[in-house]
Image (tube, rainbow, N blue to C red; front, side, top):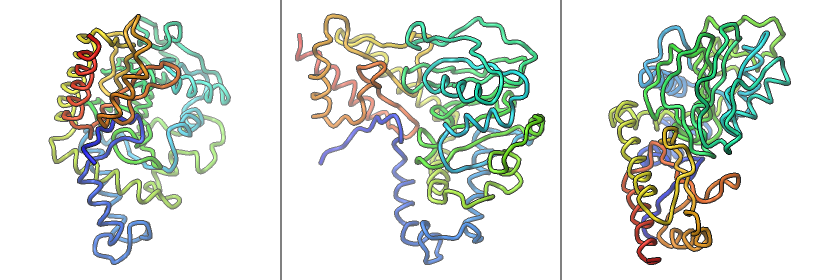
Length: 357
């Protein structure tokens, strides 16, 4: 079987070195003679892995001492509830830029007063709203920095007069972030930093404890900070894989280096979309995501969609079918996706265009 080019939107492609190390750890974790799947989370060997993973997060993102990192089981969707339970007292605003942003808003509205401060649904979430005024008296503004379905991204840290909370599930560790500007950054691991099953949360410690409601122990971020993410049994294997992925990221130069690589990958594919007479991008050019590139057949060429999908599949392109709400195609260029795979997709698009001339 030839080289497969993986563009899945999530779970993501992972670094081969992380996979290779996981294979060894499945057989013997750190010389204990015990598989990583069976290791006790109370052993010194596992605690060292947790400490290393936490330290890598802080190093790679330059996280200040004002913040702490926790790892919890599950996915980012449950964090929609955590956010409202821990931070919503009077009123919060949400920037509605896609399905996941809208779901986060809906969850908050079940807890207290929350509203959409701006929304791009009028054009099928194909752009990031701009020019809206942010009240300073909000409990927080919630943003979703990257929208996997629609291929839009907030690529810079916004200046916010109120506490800022961000779901960075699909672009964390892909670009530099000024963590000090956020009270909370959270997300699922399975886009850029590991497999499904674990979430990360980067929390400003003094922002907690300000709500008057009772917070169930498991839903209280303070519980997990105090217990160093081991209030209950953590998702051991997912955290192990996260640690291996971050070790790989550090080895290639860290977030700053991967950001430049990601920019080149995106430019390569967007350049072909804009050049090729058969395809057109769906996101506003200024808001195009570096992580999820969405495109469709050009007007008048729609009947070629299924044919191109089959053509690409023959050339071992995996995971390029677009989400049903957008259609067309989506190539996810997460950190571990090599630029050679992006070039292979570009070559595939060029070849298909030549066949149709």
